[in-house]
Image 1 (cartoon, rainbow, N blue to C red):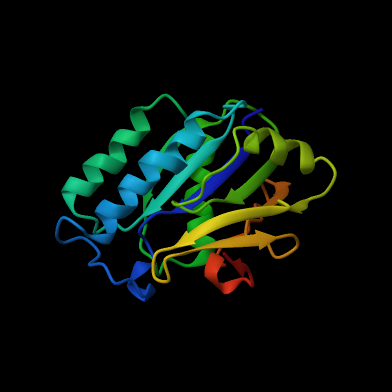
Image 2: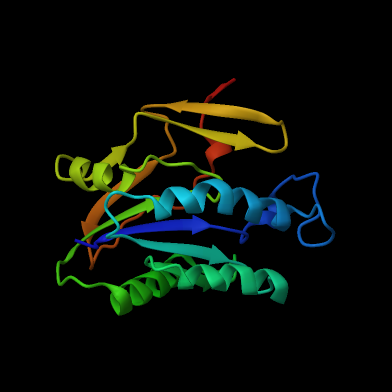
Length: 195
């Protein structure tokens, strides 16, 4: 069943991000670097899911330059349930929730009131069984955290290994009315082990 929603904040809240790279300008801009990373790893891991019944929403800055919007928009043609949402970073949580819910309801193919919402960053590399594992685990518990996961911090040029229960790979099961989610927690704000 396609009741699993994954949100990825692609380039929305980055004015607070302390990156050595320029956001959009130049050959080595943050966005050029991030798109390459996303296409080579994160996107491929979504395309390779053993269970393709999910909805992936990339949350992006409405002021993204056209050349990058064209790249992001092209992802919607890949044959998976992927949608780009251009929303202001200052949009209220309740308004964002409403936007996300509306877009999900437009594209879902089920009539279940159950919904699972997960977060995945644009640099995460997930297992081919991630979607299936999340769906199975949320049958046992409404809130799950994958046992461990790894992220790469471009500022410190280090990999960060996260272990349960501090893992940022959290999913929440609720219903359409409540529409609970694990938003607004950055990977680097959660204690981890650097390797």
